[in-house]
Length: 317
Length: 293
Image (cartoon, rainbow over the protein chains, first blue to last red):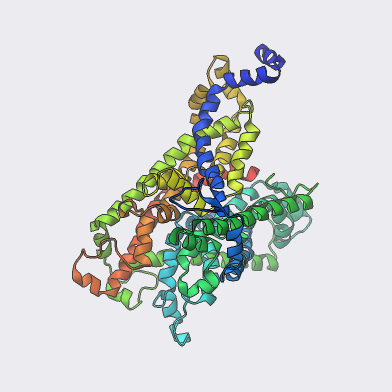
C-alpha cells in the first residue's frame, strides 16, 4: 500500500515513463497481437487510397496516379449500378426482416418447454448448423433442391416440370434467406436463452399470483427481459442490410440468377480479383463498407436516444 | 410450482410442441438425408428412392475418396489450418487481451478503440488481398492462417474473462515481486482454461469452414483445404483426380451422387466430433462475456 501512495505522488511525464517502465512486460505482451491488427486491420484501410488512384500492380500503390472520384463516377454510370444496389438492399433487408425474429421465437418457444430432454434435443440440433461451413450448407441445399433432387422428385406429381430453385432468379432470395435462417437461428436462440436465465423467477411467480396466463407471461415478462440482448444483436445485424455475406451469395448464384442475386461483394470479386480492375473494385467495395458502418452507427445512436433512461435497452457504447 | 392448466394452457402447450417438432424436422432432415444417401445403393440414388433411411448399403464412395490422394491431402490441409489458427489465435490474442484487461495499462482506452475500429469498419476484399500480396503470403499456407487471426471479438471475450478474475488471487504474487508476465502465465492462464478452450475451438472450426480465404489467396492445388474440394465436387462435379478408379463407377450417375454426399459427410464429421465441447463451452463463454454487453 505504501508503495502505491508513493506512486500517486509522481506527476506528468515522469509518472508516465515510470508506469511504462514498471509494466514494460505488459507492452511486450500486447505487441505481437497489436502488430497483426495494425497490419491486417489498418493495412487494408491504407490500401483504400487505391479507390482514388489509378492503381497499377507493376507501378505499385505509391507511384500510381491520383484520379479523384473517377471510379465512383464510373460506378454510377455502370450498367449494373441500379441492379447491384437494388439486389444488395433487398436481399439484406428481407434477410433481416425474416431472419431476425426467428431466434427470438425459437428461444421463447424453448423457454416454455418443461420436458428437459426435448428442449435439449431441439437446442442441440438447431445450434449445430452454425458450426458447419457455408459451403457445406449450400452443398446440402444443392443436393436437395437441384432439378433431379429430392424436393423436385416429391413435387413432381404436382408440377408440370421441375422447379428451378437454384436456377430461377425468382427463387434466389428465398433460397438465400432460407439457408441463412436454417444455419443461424439456433445460434442466436442460444444467446437469447442465456439472457433468459438472468430473468428473476420472482417476476413469474408474482404474475401467476395475479392470474397472468402463459401467453401474457411470455409477452410481459420474458420478452422485456431479453430486450437488451435483442437491441444489441439488432444493432450488430443492421450492417448486414447493406453488406450481405459474400460466401453464401457466391456459392448460390450463377449467371442465370444474376438478375436478383448479383450483389456488391460478388461484383467486387468479379471485377477486382477476376478482372484485375483493382481500383474500380476497391471503390465499389468502399461504398458497401461505408454504408454498413454508417448503418450500425446510426442504429446505435437512434436506439440510444430512444432508450435513454430505461433499463430495458442497451447499446454497444 | 404446480398450478392448474386451463383449456387455453393446454392448447398453448400443444401449439408449442407441434411448432418445435416441425422445426426439429426442418433441421434434422437434411442432415439425415445426406448421411443416408452417402451409404445407399447407386441404383436407388439414381432413381431417387432414398427419402429418409439408406436403401441398401454401399460404402464404395468412401473407399474411393479415401484412396484419392488429393482428397486426403485436402483433409490434412484443413486439419493443419484449423490447428494452426486455433493455437496462434490463443498465442497472440490472449496476451494482448490480458494486457488490455489491466487497468494500470497506460493508453488502454486508446488501444481498445484502435482495435474496436477494425471490427466496426472493414476495408473490404481488394485492399485485404493487396495487403496479403504485399506481405508475400499469396499462394502460401500462411495466407490461410495469419490474416484471419486478428478478430477483436475474441479479444473482447478474453478480456472480459480475464478482468473477472478477482484481484486478491493476483495480489500475493505481486507482493512477492512477480512480474505481470509471471502473474499472467502462472495464475491467470490456468484459471482461464474454459474461455481459452472456447476461443481455440471457435477459431479452429472457423478455419475448418473457411472458404473465402483459400478462394482468394490460393491457386496451388497442393494447398487446397477440403472446402474448396467440396465445392468442386458438388457444384462443378469434378474430382481432384478424375481419372482414378474403375471406369464403371463413372458410368453410374448414382455413384456420383453418392460420392458428393460422402464428401459433404466427411466435411461435417470433424465438426460433429468437437460439437459437444463447443456447445458446452459456448454457453459458459456467453454467460461470462457476450451478454454483459
